[in-house]
Amino acid sequence: MSGQTVDELLRRLALDRHPEGGWYRETYRSSEFIAGSALPARFDGPRPFSTSIYFLLEQGDISALHRIKSDEIWHFYAGAPLALHLLTAQGELLKRKLGPDFAAGESFQIVVAAGCWFGAEVSGVGEFPLSAAPWRPALISRISSWETEAICCRNIRGIRRQSSDLRGHCDHAEGKMTEKNAGKGAR
View 1 (cartoon, rainbow, N blue to C red):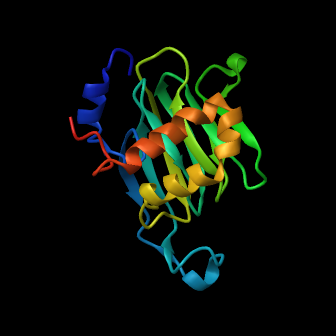
View 2 (view 1 turned 90 degrees about the vertical axis):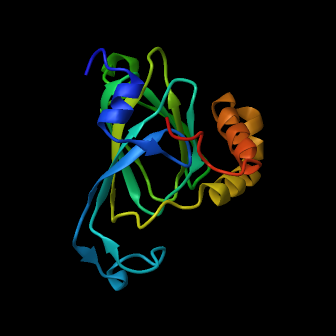
View 3 (view 1 turned 30 degrees about the horizontal axis):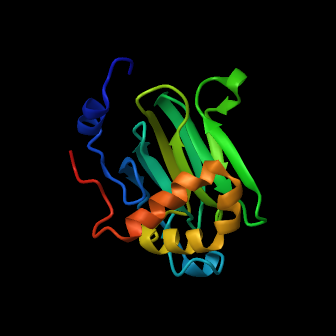
């Protein structure tokens, strides 16, 4: 994968703009379902067993803070490291690095627990990180980024003042709230 540009990967992997930032494509959706009655109350009906996406984030872009109902397991594939900023249900602010350099504290996989607020940005030098994220049970559709960003920014103002790691995510979210559409547009 060395030497490939963002534009080449966007084209080859057929990635679309993600409403929370970055580029993605769903690569798998199970044809089998878990009954709604077998899932925790936070789910509103049946869900496929699993879904998975490719995710690419360009240098200078961010994945805005959001949360989902399922555990999300990020997998590193190529490129620059990815910094994940997590705000746990207990109010703990964590920073995890997805990447190939174990000596630098990076990991090939990072788990984001269901209900945890999280966002991402490119960490260090490099044009992009390419990763994947499966969910079990599957996402039906993305939570509205407009709603989650508004709620998130109202609820973490105190932490934002204390943490430069979250400042860009909330500034990004507040800016997007005034835009008419979520993406920067297709390339």
